[in-house]
Image 1 (cartoon, each protein chain N blue to C red):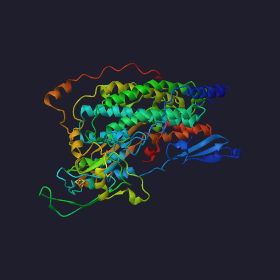
Image 2: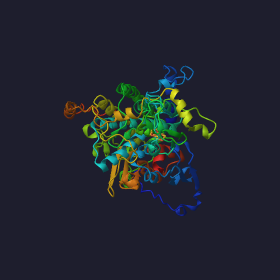
Image 3: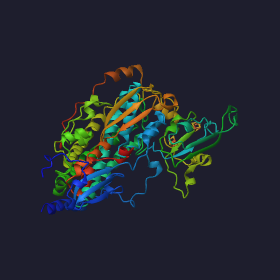
Image 4: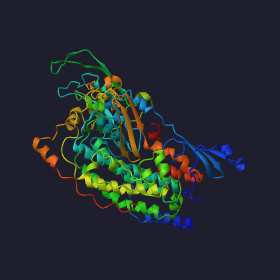
Length: 396
Length: 193
Ligand code: SF4
Ligand code: SF4
């Protein structure tokens, strides 16, 4: 069957209309499946090994963060935002702080904007490295070159976390942004450490790419699997690499610049493949692009202050204007992370009245019922891995 | 047939690795990283410190208690009294607890302290057998002061680093604004589809 020309799949398929003699089987994949990137349950209805219908059930990681945001003041929110997308905490912090800054009309110093850009790109690399490792592990295990690749990518991710540790003092939940700028300035020797780490990665990336694309098993397991056509991708609100792999040239770094992206050129990788392999290609190309951006910026960080507001001293320091609403979105490694913010909440406006997060992974989840049907159970991990959802972000 | 060639190419990676220099490090070759080797800013546990006069620095202002996002700090202020060292009247700390079970190591308490009284350490607390072992009481926090190393940060250093006027001499501002845009971007990376 030509997957690209078949009719749109019905995600609400009534199983009674399917051949009654087909002897369907319901199979729960997850919530404790190692390939589900957290805790996701997918209910699969199988005819033999072929998937007839797939229903994802997110929610196992729900922590009520949006409600929590109404009780904490703007100053306290940044460390909480680290915990949504636990593979790319840096960009989460930035999404929150950009939303607050735009609502308050605060300018960020140029040095801080450059630092944020570098941090965002490093985080993209770290996130994509983790994705590459786990994706190839899911897909091939030892035979697809998977397990060894995972060892390598984790090794490459380590120096990136080390430079984060050098800058912020934490390897993961950094809390290095605040309204108006950053909290930690660049320490001595940081630029050199970043450059060494980028040189290492740039030298080794082609090998990792080659390990995958020259492997016929890998190609067979990714090409033509999990097709999400362009109209469907737009309809479901896919963003980021998943959307660009469906042939839509949209990247907020270039199209709605934040940080210092308006001062540099971002080459956006797009693929028309729409399948698992296209998503792989786009992410690999993005990694090369991130290395290039980091190398370009690291020597050009301007001097100056890193924060335009007074540093945090009290808990109620920042007050949001009452009744003002604003949607802000930035491009994270997974796509458009939006923040819908209404000002003027508790503590005389120091807390947001409402803070809604638009996680890119949740929309990637919505593609599963379409992308899985017609494939076999072993393809579920490939498609899921290529969409790169992080359940912490989906469930919040 | 594809499977055989695919498996072979995957296994040849493994085979090649046998003849490469070792890139991973054995735990036996190198001991675990010492706290001193950690980054200067690495933040793990907490300590309360004394000021330059030898008094306990904390003035029980409760700002850290209020700002803590997970509300794990409890400050009990004591009565005001004169300092035996300087003779000035000031507030004293009666009790202080910090519950590491809920702490998210955000460094906000360190940043807001007006007296530079609370700092973070580069050493993790040793795991305990009970929940109570993870509660840092006042005695443990003061004991941590001498058990170094501390991180680089305390409140005044952090605030100085984030000062909005830092490095903004009038002349520097002018050069900053006229600074040239970064070099033109290079050609698109190889492998871009
Ligand atoms: S570092 Fe821990 S104790 Fe200090 S404010 Fe953050 S959560 Fe609270
Ligand atoms: S540690 Fe600092 S912020 Fe906390 S009560 Fe003492 S003086 Fe105040």
